[in-house]
Image 1 (cartoon, rainbow, N blue to C red):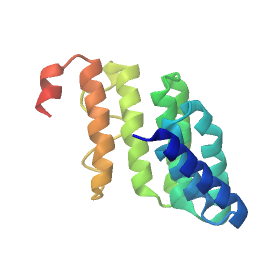
Image 2 (cartoon, helix red, strand yellow; image 1 turned 180 degrees about the vertical axis):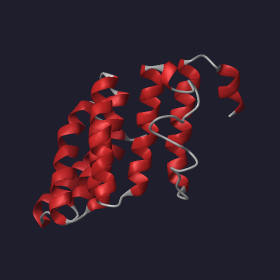
Image 3 (cartoon, rainbow, N blue to C red; image 1 turned 90 degrees about the vertical axis):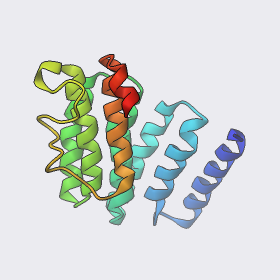
Image 4 (cartoon, rainbow, N blue to C red; image 1 turned 30 degrees about the horizontal axis):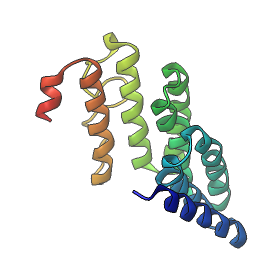
Length: 173
């Protein structure tokens, strides 16, 4: 509720990170911008910082927060900001390849969920419309035991149901 305090704490965290060096800075950047500053400033301002968080994280060998920064910079936030779906989809293939290259399979799964969502929205004839499966995502193959990733699945399916006006099905879930 106290957004000014959140903003001050996130800015303080980033300031402290600047004084102690690059170790763990990818995680600090990712957390500060997604869970604090994205709520207190325009989301578009977070994109360059997340890009930097990705670069530094990869240089430091901190692949988990680095790939999260990349996923949010190139896929999630552009989708929420209403960027063109075809441009985001082109980035999805690159982000997915990067996540898989550094063995971040849960990150890759989030990209697959969002990418399939965009495929369904871009060309419903290529997909099952409101079902989150198709050329990018096969739920029988692409799965995670991590409960946190079910949120992305439910979010993506809910968006499809609402956009395609299947309100009864959306209400049942």
